Image (cartoon, rainbow, N blue to C red; front, side, top):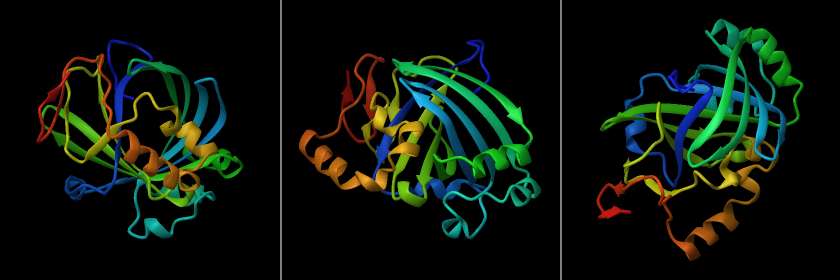
Length: 214
């Protein structure tokens, strides 16, 4: 979460992506993220995360088991985060750092774990991330933009197919319990029927290559 004057709140918007965008190649060092959800209900969640530089053989990494010693040697960062329900692109999030070995031991004992590779890029005036999920959540790709204030009047990259900021199925805690691979085909069929959607109460959306959307 970004440091801001807003305290323990994050302001972000999230989008479904079909193919890994070329812009991810500009990130010289993607991050490997492995995180466990110790509790998740009604929008509240407690998460333990390990994050470190992604190894070259990341696609062969175990889905659940974490070698805490290896990650610690790779300059891993361990955190524990408490989250509240999201509303209008805003969510309570309080985070503290954990010893990476302790974080790894917790994750290795957890039942609900997700693994993903995170790419970062600066597009226009905003910093974006693209998460490529591994294991049972593959081949899910999600793009996020975060600011220190509500994300309004956003220029949305063309690789963003539809907005899922208010779709609870794409929250990480939901994916930890209900992996995308189990319902990906149904979602793609749903998207074909409904077409793309974008949040309409956060200013004017401008999707690259199209007319601005109110």
